[in-house]
Length: 262
Image (cartoon, rainbow, N blue to C red; front, top):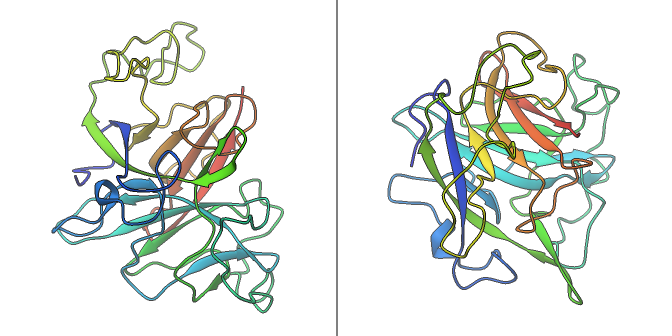
């Protein structure tokens, strides 16, 4: 589904792609494939590029693809979320020699490696302007889970998004100790079919519910998505039960990914 408006809060549960490795996988999963209306919101796999490939690079190494989010509007427009990764693993596609793509080559002068969110980034297509150096490769490291005795396995999930009313997710003052955000244990959800607690894994749109202080680069930035790291469905390093916040710049041409933990 498409997101009607980034101001509308949607909560997402993950549906594993079919016929793939590990919990989800990256090979031929119909559940995560693009629909007849174009690319869909999902976690893992490989990005469904609209323009020429733009894979963000840090220190000569590709970042890890985490998710893609369908942005509002009648025509397909996608935001691709990438995180700094712990270098290449055995299951990752070999992107070739990326040593020519490094900090201080293509990076805009307004973006520095010392920024708290660097090099995590959001690439937007079409019409985006990347904030970091990119390489013209279409495949690279992707979201994974760790399987006991087997190591890391790529995963891919379709995101089932549901509009969510803000009666249970309070937008009260940050100082209000009674605020119960979507990821809080104080909010109850219906059980999953597999017996899980039913708590969503991702939020798309709506306000950002910060674990710590508001770290948006500016007050006019848009909250794109929040991804929970406290799950065994996939592995992302957000510290102790942390969250990853994807934010778009005011023009919606690029973005950053900010990690906070308890």
